[in-house]
Structure formats: C-alpha cells, structure tokens
Length: 64
Image 1 (cartoon, rainbow, N blue to C red):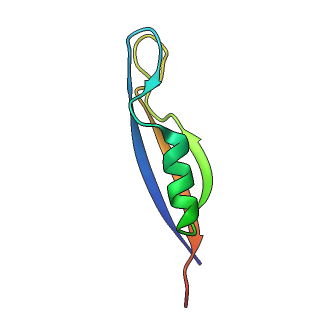
Image 2 (tube, rainbow, N blue to C red):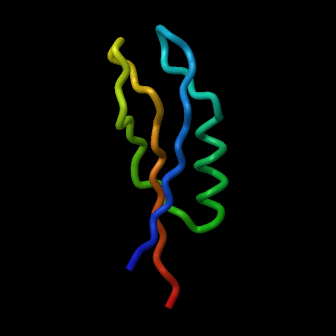
C-alpha cells in the first residue's frame, strides 16, 4: 500500500508560468524523507492557455 502527498505550486506571470517556489528544492526535500516523485501535473488552465498552478505528486510505501 502507498500513501500520497500533493504539493500545490502557485504560478505567477501573465504571459509565462513562473513557479513562485523552487520546485526542485521541494522535490529534493521530500525525496530525502522517503517520498518518490510520481508526477508534476497542471490541472487548471487559464484563459491564455497557461497553467494556473502545478501539483507535485509524491508517493511512498506505508510502513506496516
């Protein structure tokens, strides 16, 4: 069995989708805690076609 954690990364900018946080640092931090990066997903799209935010999805095995 696995547990999942989703971290929302807000974006800024009108004509570009610039992350407000350094997502590589977030990935490194969670990886050091035993989480595995599954996917970076942009579920919401603005009128200009750019994502509104990214979901960074992690998983790890549940220790029984």
